[in-house]
Length: 198
Image (cartoon, rainbow, N blue to C red; front, side):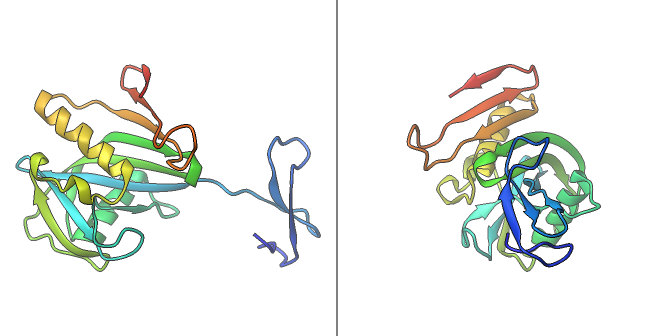
């Protein structure tokens, strides 16, 4: 950030009084500019035991598969955002949204909130951000062509939970895959509140 959105003057990065982390602060009007994580919302739409996936038509990760998901808009609930993304990316109508996986990605300042949902219409088709949309049985998912680790993990949990017939809410923390200590380190939390490290 270079300029203040309030007055247009330059900003400087430093810790303001009473805070404990650097913020961009206007050199003239003293407005503090907070930069907060972005929220990604999405759903795993299911019909007859099959999952609706979208092949991405845009970067990042064009030509790879994902669930319908995207940025939460201002003034929108997480459930409404997930429904909108399903409509935009797959012309899919969903309901019965159940919170399923929350993924923290602190190294890229993002949080994913993923629902399980019932797919209502069979006339889904690719929206402007998708090349193709298709229903997959869990064993048919193109695992090597999934766009994002968060989606991979959510779908893996879904397949396992489907076999057990019991779905649990989970919280994952994915760490930076470029970190020297490990290619991917993450923490899991399930509905019981237990925390396991893999």
